[in-house]
Amino acid sequence: MTHDSTPDGDDRAAPDGDAELMDVVVSVDDAHMPTMTDVVSALESAGMMIESTMPVLGTVTGRVPPARLADIGLVEGVAAIEQSRRFQLPPPDSDVQ
Amino acid sequence: MADSNPDAARQRRDTAPTYQAPGTTATTGRYLVLLDSTDIPAAAGALRDLTSDDIATSSDFPGESVPSDALETAAAVVFEQLGVAVVSAAPELVPELPDRARAQRPIIAMEPERYVYASNPPVAADLGQYLHGYRDGVDNLVRALTGAVGGAPPATAAVDESQLTWGLQHTGVAASDLTGRGVRVAVLDTGMDLEHPDFTDRTITSESFVAGQAVQDANGHGTHCIGTACGPLDQQQQPRYGIAHGAEIFAGKVLSDQGSGTDGQILAGINWAVANGCQIVSMSLGAATTPGQPHSDVYEQAAGRAMQAGTLIVAAAGNDSERSSGVIRPVAHPANCPSIMAVGAIDVDRLLADFTNSSLTPGGGEIDIAGPGVDVRSSWPLPTTYRTISGTSMATPHVAGIAALWLEARPQTTASELFGLLMRTAQRLPLPSTDVGAGLVQTP
Image 1 (cartoon, chains in turn green, purple):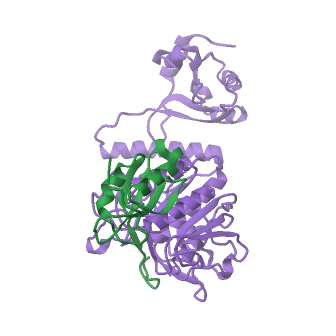
Image 2: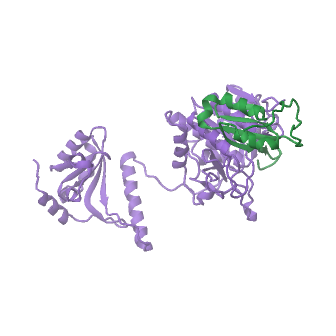
């Protein structure tokens, strides 16, 4: 799949004109677990700003311009890509936590 | 002295009195004998001595398929795969048989063979009588084997928490000598108060996955959960509140001191725990879901890999419900993943916590098991030191700590087997499984 070659941003600006980057979590499929580093490189080339990789679990987290989401999903070896969820505990003085 | 006359055997059985104690179900006149299955030939020999008759063993027949007429004609049939024999005994021997059975080493126990019926729409009285008879038979066998008789769980009296928290009492922790020794338990939360006096002699491996924050817990939640899962045997102040006091503690800070975190931080914590050989990961955290919302494929794949690598992940089902107002919400993410054990909360009376979520979304969003989750006392950062709070967050580390005890007792258990083992051995509760899964987690 061809796409415009754009330099990786070194700040949070989204090259494709979208206001905000999306936090995503990606899982690598079983077949590509042995070559996960290649998948991570491909994700970067497709426009994902890599935050962290978890080699044992086969997951990668990072930021993606929403317009590039489809490209990320099409990277060879990607099993799933989801928007990252946030967690929030109740305040520490709550009775129920 | 073999009497190999099948007709004689049948005649004996036809004339044998049907033993029926009051309130029990009808028996066939034959006995089920539990053999020492480590030496079937010796057991068969002992049976032969006992009955003075020819016996048949299942290996005599093709495919180990014992035809029904063999059961009728042989004095005894040994089912080799099961280590059980069906024995016809002469009527005059009936009172002696259980004692003679115990005198023979390769025979472990003996009980009357019962008639078993297909399940029909029950006529209540007959069914009750059948069940009582079945229970009596089981009690007899237990008594014969152990000298003890099982019973129903004790009715809930007022619980004395001066020595032990109610949670440790109701889960059987108090009665166990197990410590979780040799097991690494990772608690992924707000970190740990590394200065807490109850943990000064424990080795705690810790790591922060929250940028700009150290593991030192300034929130409290993590310290409370670690306390429940792995707190000490001898704490500074009674009662005892901790389960796996001999386990190795891995404190992963995946939630900030403000109690917030992201998928990335949680996954990083799980990865760290698995890479460090933690057999159990306890996660008292969740993001609310909507009914029917699919679970995260990313987490499910990660959890499956963790399980393959030897790590069982246990997570809180979530506190989004308000049952007293009729509000029931589905299991939170990531507990709603099939490969993650979802823990619901019950109170001291073994009733549902008001806030505990339910199995509203199939395909992973089921409650698997329940733990003590209302008014749970545990450690808290100094100066408070101890605190009593509620939540599926509190139920979860009970399961994690008890899982460590199971692993110490059965070190060869895989993560996948441990999931099933905890559920199989849970105390069944008279509550919907949609709310408590298999029931209240129990110590070996």
